[in-house]
Length: 301
Image 1 (cartoon, one colour):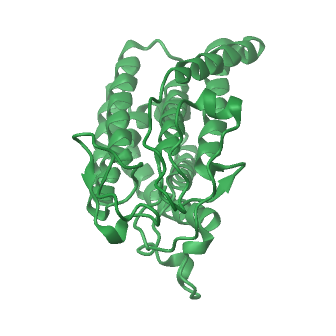
Image 2: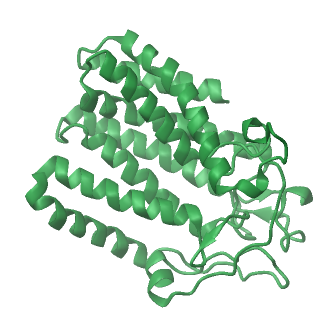
């Protein structure tokens, strides 16, 4: 699955980069360094944030097949590796970042297909027609009697493809200053993860009652919005515009959510958040942290 994801990212990036006069050889060179750097970054992030699931052997941190990778670390590692190549080649870094953003989203969407095969990353019990039937050994403690769970990985997959399409449209219109499209990629993906982390019930480390990756997504969302405002309007107007954009995001979340299923009795996993991000943060209604869970997984982020 990783190979297909990388090939898709190369294909999309090459077409966009060449449409602006770039050479495809640079895309290949970036991919050759960015892919292994992304694997290393993804594993480091997983080890640091899910240390309890790392095998208790000296080679445990290297066992990617046991526990998997963290998407945030993978993105960071891949981007840093790519930047190293771009600097050595004296390339137009902002323009290349914009060309690469849609391809990264397509690659992340393809990567999420693996979660279907591994039966992981889902929300609370549901009767929705697209709910997945999950085997008992893949359900968290407290949810063993529920066989049908909503696929949060599928929501992310669809969002990634829609966002990639929107970024390609913006690329062609040339209305966003480089690397504003890459900033929109970070903001858009982080926004999706904020909602996704409120739905997921798989075990995770918590801070102030919320999942760790929820806070990571919030920080990256705000940072990306400020970065976008700085790119488009400069330092003087950036704080004001970023605050307005962040306020719009919060207000857009206020009416989202809906009725979520009640937590099963005796559940040791944090129940699904009911209502929106705004309601969750303003009322400080947080779920209880989950019990330790050590089932190996190919991808937990």
